[in-house]
Length: 416
Image 1 (tube, rainbow, N blue to C red):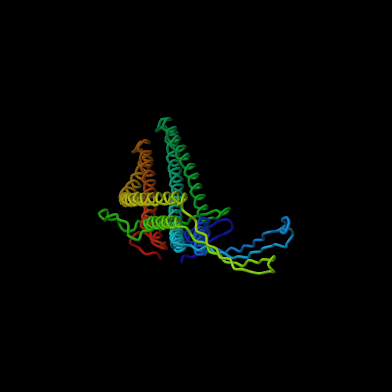
Image 2: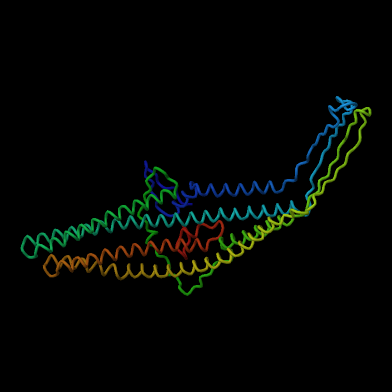
């Protein structure tokens, strides 16, 4: 397990996805809510297995009448005990339906865990990316300042017209505006991460992350994007169908009337406290209410669950195929930007600045070169972010119950 994050004062330093996930799984309220839902289903399972309670009845007759029935002289007292007997396998059907509900809520808990892991990894990657965007924007401001100083010197020396200085000033102010916006976006990303980590009042600060730059092995675009048979969301859809089918069985069995039997003792005071046994049998007649409405509703819920499962399967397959394509595109873009575009843009910008200082290049060429360099850095940062986030999405789509480790590492690598 990853070591806990370093906390100093009101600042929480997060150095890896493992640390962020460990903290979120420990403190996130949404997990406690999901666990409470599972415990509630377990309570329903206990209730489903209980048999009906017996009824104790006390009847007193012939009290306070007229004539020979006045007072308590003709009192007849009956003490009886009755028990409703469930027929048609109702109890076992209820237990089965409750067991299905417990299984479904267990899968729901696992889904919440996997969703939380995915969101934490995505939010941490977003926080790292926006932090780097701030650094890129600040570097853009620094380069714009250098060009502005060089331009002013050339204008003062009469080697450039004054409008060139104004152009350099506009470029510098534009860079400053971008830097302010990047700072706001970075702050928003950190706040989102803090919410997921359930750290109110604590400033979350991601450390410089080597994991963010790790592209991992190149995705294979020819690999068939197919969900594993034990994939969690598919298992949830199947479990929902099983639960709906069990509920339909419960409602069909509820149409069978139960039988109530009773026995008691009757005491006749008028006859010298003689006693007699009393037996009773009660059977409802299903003339009007045969549970038709509940059976109809349960059947419709089953049909809806089957249709939702079919739709969900199509969506999951399409989502995985789309994510695989996006990962391949993002990986190739990041690799090309890192190996080819960024080195070339860096070299071109450096040469343009040196050439401008020597009078070999115009200000427009310098600004274009610097803009190209900033764009390359921003595009690489965005491509790396997409790689990390899409990889988290893919692992979530392929996720199995109680399997959290793969989402923390690039495909083809094991978690440390």
